[in-house]
Figure 1 (spheres, rainbow, N blue to C red):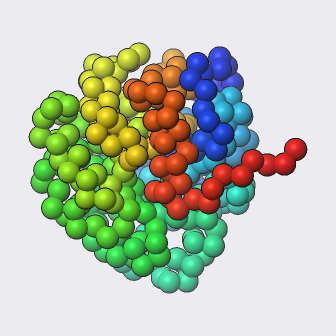
Figure 2 (cartoon, rainbow, N blue to C red; figure 1 turned 90 degrees about the vertical axis):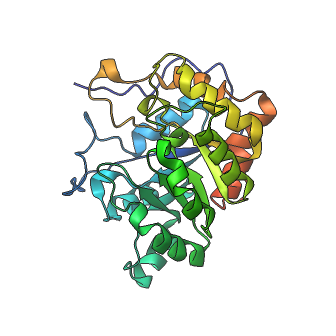
Length: 293
């Protein structure tokens, strides 16, 4: 049985006002998992009410909801989640070259600002459709969230350099075979960032770390190298609700994870970039305006 904590110790690292959680999934009743993807997360559905409590706990003001693999190419759950969260949320949807312009209009009107490429098992649209999705996204001014096994990044570098959209390399690059901070894979990440359209997302460290927690030293070394190279291109996400967790014992402590991952950024100025300024640029968000009391 899995019970997700939605409150606890306040993170030692205090998030600045306007902080953006750039990577979560959310699931509402009435939207079953579809063939081709994974099942819905274990435990109670991680819905808007649960996530609002996580926002209050960690100090998050805004959020990017990414279409979950469970729903494949059907964005109806994402649209419902965006409606439930209101103006603090924007979305990353799944589209392809056949997505109707009417659906694109609907997605944009609901707060979708990007499209997802997921080239791992269970993903709905992979690298085979990269250029087609990029063309659709670029025409709308959307970004791309691109996820694949970064151990093969050299094979894909030329295609990634040709993208027209702003895009983010997801989940610390998902270097399943490891990544030496001075090695060719991280050098490729730096080149892609230097091209001017690539960002790098700190999220889901536990999904590809070989050394494991609590410090995830292997991913930390690579992440620090990228952050030192381009602090203006880092964004951060909780990866809530940690879909790989099946039991409460497997579930990470979000305050500990926040402190660990944000601790890889060298100072408060770098954290403000990663949490406020950088995601505003990547996701084309309006400047943060605190709600009136």
